[in-house]
Length: 206
Image (cartoon, rainbow, N blue to C red; front, side, top):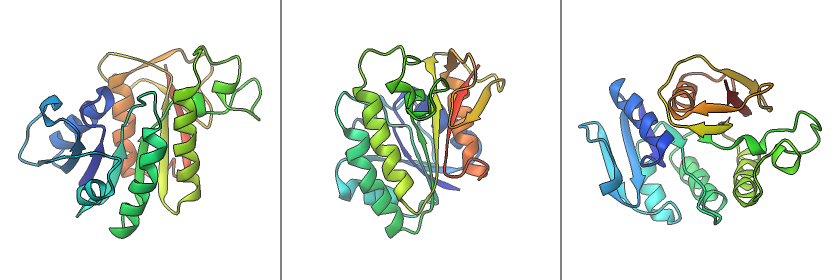
């Protein structure tokens, strides 16, 4: 499979990239600073560019079969501003599958399913800016005609994949407190090969 990866220099993106290359897939990674990439490989094609520039996104999408976006928030609106460009490039290249890494804040609150977690007392974050950007990106995905999945980890801690975690559609698993970068990347990567969670947000935690 040829994967288009955004956010390859981030914590989750790095681990997704490592898994994809180990399994023999080709990866095109659009990055602002190639010097931050921790991995080099014959199957890795690196494009220096910006996810907010349509030409760069379109170039990265060429010949790809699926998209993983592990872009993080930057206290701006990068996620929601870049999503229309990703979706347009996907349409142009007839790519239908996209998996994104979101936040548990955009899952439904268990105490009040009519609101999002970041709007409820379940969220411990004082600022809602990042969650609001994730929410806008999610809403754009919902309106698209793609096979999307949004992986929504709770508090991300450094650590390897264990393969032992809990997931739940549209909500965070009960009493979920944390999840490692490794397990988040593992679950995200595995969604490339399954449509079980097609057009779902999936909460993931221990």
